[in-house]
Structure formats: structure tokens, C-alpha cells
Length: 287
Image (cartoon, rainbow, N blue to C red; front, side, top):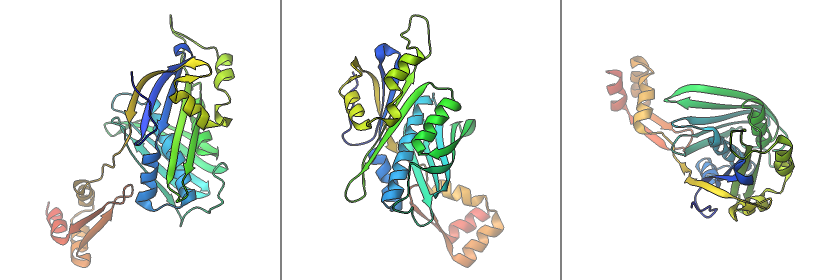
């Protein structure tokens, strides 16, 4: 039987509870959230927002099938910020938060305003996109997306804590989904589900996560189906960078080689640096 863990790494756990009538998805993503902080030297408020968005992105994996890649984009007007997170079929994750000089230390992350977009891709082709208004927290917006856009009868909550140095100590989330009625399968009526899980969004999440880890919640055993690692997996490479530059055309490539002596490109997700020499630019210009 799969073992749940919160020690080291980042994990996605799938489990059944309430006799198999409710599916749980539990995310532990402190390592991934702190990689976002580290790659872009985020301050504490930015780190909290990025960590919550990281958990939200990975919770969406509950609705991925086969080779689907998931994307969560958030554009905020209050405060001014933008998020992009991706998770592929192999649980490789990358994310990035953009702000203008960092968020104010006292920014209320439960009073955001903007738009959330969740999308799925197969072989690079978009197969689904849902758009939801953000009026509150990212977690509340994701909850609204699942209920309104995907018609999921579920509840979710997230937990983010930082240590004294502003690093991510814990970034976790739990999604409880009432499974549809099927012949000879356990089933919960809507009222019964709400009685058990309706307060999840306002509950103290840490004791609940600990209870699930101990395989007992609401007096019911938790049956763990699988525990999968989630890994930082930026897909950038020098080959990809050069492929993108090649699309600029011969004239601009030669101008970059002559005037700038080459090009320096930084990955917007992991901040890796790629140096392209003048000779390489001229080679691309020649085809």
C-alpha cells in the first residue's frame, strides 16, 4: 500500500474516503513553491501568493488524463500581479509570479481581484479552457472554477506557512470530491457530503491534513490509492532558445550579431541563462 509522506520533496496523493464515495487529492508542494521563490528571489508576500498558486496548479492534476498538460494563469488587477503555472503528465512542474517591484508587505491575499484561467493541452494543442473571476483568494477562485466551470461537487482548502527567513515551510492543499452515482458503487447524497466536507474552506487545514496522513478522517478510514512525486521540471534548453530566435528572421539575427555581438536569454520560469554567440546567430540566419 502506498505510504503518504510530508517529509522532503513534493507529492500528490490520491485516496478514497467515506466508503469510497469521496475522492481526496492531497498536495504537499513546499519544495516546488520554494523553488519558485529561490529562482526569482521573491519577498515574503510574493512567496505566499506564489506558494498558494503552486498548490492550486498542482491540485488541478486531479482532472488530468493520460498525456494532458495543465496550465493555470492568473491576472490580478488588485494587487498588480500575474501568475503562470504548468504541470505535465509526468508531474513535472514549473511556475512564475510577475509583480512590479514586489507586492506590498501588507497586501491582503484574501482580497484579490482579477481573472483565473485553467487550460488543458494534449501534444501542444489546447483542448479546454475555463475562465473564472477572482474575488477573494486564489483558493476561493479555484473552488469557484471547479464548481462553475467543470461542475465538480467538491470542496478544497490550502495551507501556506513561511519560516523566519521567508522560505516556504509548508505549501499544501486538499480537494474532496463527491464521486458521481454509479451502479453498485458507494454514493453520498449532496446533503451528506456538505455535512462532512462543506466547511473545508473555512476549517483549520493542518489538523485535517494530519488526520488524512494518519489515514482516518471524520471517523472513516482513508484508503490511499497512490502517492506520486511532483518534480521541478522546466523544459527550457539552449536548443529551444535557438529555435525561438530562428523565428526572428535573417535580417534581425544578423543585426543582433553585428550590433550586440550575440544574445543573452534568461528563462522566465527557472531564470537559467543562455548565451548565444554572434557566430551562432549568423549560422541561424543562413539557415
